[in-house]
Image 1 (cartoon, helix red, strand yellow):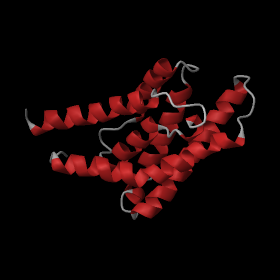
Image 2: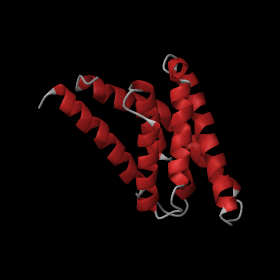
Image 3: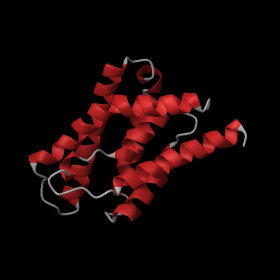
Image 4: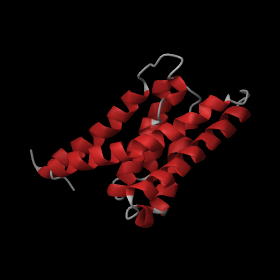
Length: 161
C-alpha cells in the first residue's frame, strides 16, 4: 500500500474512531467529564493538515455525529463547522504555539463550542444546563497535549504527510 493511500486511511480512521469514542457510554457520574472527541481530532487535523480539513468535512462529520448520537439534526454540524472555521482561520498562528498555549487556545475553542450548544439547546426549548456541564471543555483541554502528541507521533511513525 502506498503512503498516500495509507495516509488517507489513517485520516479517515481517526475521524471514525473519534465518532465512535463519542458514543462510549459512561456512568452518570462521569458523563459531564466526557470530552468532545470529534472536536479534538478535527482540531488536530485542522492544525496539522489544513488542506484535508474543510468546512464541508466538518459539517458532514457533525451530521454523522448528530445521527449517531440522536440529537437535534444539525446541532453538532453547526458546532464542528464553527470550530473548524476558527481553527483554520488562525491555523498559521496556532500551529507554532508551544503546547501550553495551544492548550489554552483549545480550551477557548471548546468553551465557545459549549456556548453554541447552550444557545441551540435553549432555542430548542431545553433548560439551562447545570454548572458541572461546563467541566467537559476543561477535560478536553487537559487531554489536548496527549491527543496531539499521540496522533502526531503515530503520524510520524507511519511517515505520513
